[in-house]
Image (cartoon, rainbow, N blue to C red; front, top):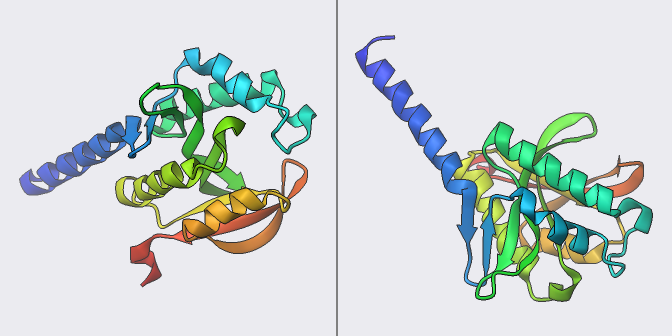
Length: 192
């Protein structure tokens, strides 16, 4: 590779690394997202196993919470981004997990914007607030053409968040052996 082409390639690689490194923490007016750490396990278990979560208890066990955190830590190691551990600014209490991550939907690779928040903070707009930052990062920093989000048909609250973010319904699917609804958001530049 010649001089200018080599410099351009090196600059593009450095810019890409910088963009992904910048995703280790994000902030909004009320929230802070940071790269998860193993010490988040107790908070993940507390939030994941809360009986107020309208999902079958056998799907939200402590083991599932630990597995989810371990998978999230591995995703960050492999890809340099992933769902953040979410803290309320001020007291810095862990209140959930929000962010983009690789997934498979109907056999295809996708990047999902997902959220899971402590029931004590539901109704405050936190999911929308930090998921908006996740969408911005997916399009601006990761330069993706689209992202997906999905939930069960009964989860009207998550579907409302998706719609507030601009996602549109794409299909009824099966995920983890259960019926789900799939929503998609296309990057502004890709919308033409």
